Image (cartoon, rainbow, N blue to C red; front, side, top):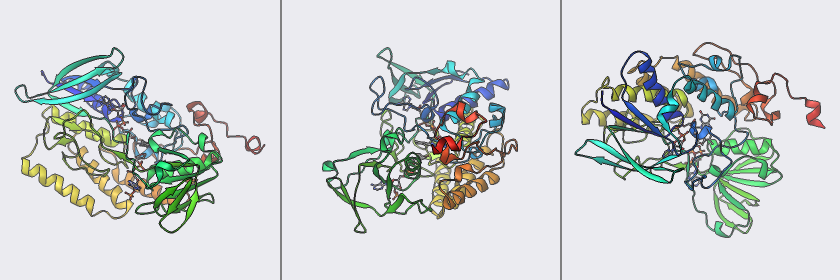
Length: 456
Ligand code: FAD
Ligand code: NA7
């Protein structure tokens, strides 16, 4: 068919794109020429853990923000692929909140079934993109990091799946330049070990703050203080974790808070979110958005409204993850293959505005869950991605939100039932708070932790 498609990034979004094309090909359809470029030396995006911080082996800004002992922060039943279940992958029932390595294994299991790896060029970073009017194609300049060589390729469609939880948003606080403890961003947090016996301050009150607080508490940090700008996380914190309003300034080792509290801290971790960053795109093609459920500038949250040959996957804030990337990738594929037509420019803007207005009406977390549920329904209805019971998944998300509110330390011990194959998850052999080993081997091991050993 002569079309050439470029995919930037081989994280869950880029891999979903490869899988979408592969599933079409398996049904006997012709697919375009595809090339995927990934700057790391393996696929999996965030799930490909690295011990490094700062820059990677070849001096590129490091992508990874994940850390040791990271366990899924939502039920696995809410992110399950509709065409590859957890039961199919593990051949045993597992709990609802697996650790990172287990989810990484699951992602790899699906993609390894295909020949997708042959499409991916690793250690290759997209440097710059131009749209060449005469050719009606994108010219993309890449660096092969291993060979230290620059090259270019032309594509009819360019799919950007580079994630948006990698470039830190690092605010300034008065006096922080003279603060005498450690200052870092959650992006560089690689686990709780360095913070054992410390008093730490987390700035921000969203997922990163919540999870780093609980993880540090679990692994022996002396005290955790969370400072919020707009709203506290507001769950029932155990003794040792507290929430305070915003920091106003720092002096030596002390932080001063809006309510008059003054406290000394050994370390400050900015859990202040990330920037959507596209250093390889000219500014007219970049998404310029905060972290939200319907970023401006994309039809169906996928197709750029500036250039309809440019597509983005996974740029939304996320309740749903892997199955949402699939829904987007299936939609992107059918659009590229000419099976979905774009409406008029006016209709595109009306559609975008409608979704953005709907998001602005959301008040509670439940409303946000419903919003993203409707968004995914809308996408799947346009494609042949297996429709699943999204209303049930939305219910599970709402139970998850309640569970966290009731007990932030035990919500990961709860279990859910898959809407894909009705498998009921099993309780993990060891309560999450007592499980300090997050390896795949230990996770799949049947023996509960020996509590007497722990008490010694
Ligand atoms: P990413 O996973 O970020 O992958 C993007 C890929 O693009 C990377 O491999 C990167 O190297 C590559 N890339 C970037 N720039 C370039 C370039 N210029 N050239 C070539 N390649 C490039 N989700 C959950 O479902 N459950 C969780 O428990 C969970 N926990 C999380 C915890 C943390 C700390 C973070 C940061 C995220 C978490 N997420 C979680 C969300 C997670 O981001 C998604 O699950 C998923 O990884 C997003 O996939 P993606 O492919 O869109 O982006
Ligand atoms: P989020 O969800 O984007 O949240 C960012 C948080 O940082 C949020 O609480 C913000 O407060 C706060 N923030 C942002 N800027 C500032 C400044 N300048 N001062 C104080 N506080 C600020 O990012 P996360 O890292 O928590 O989560 C991203 C992903 O990583 C997520 O998918 C997880 O699974 C892991 P606000 O509420 O806007 O006032």
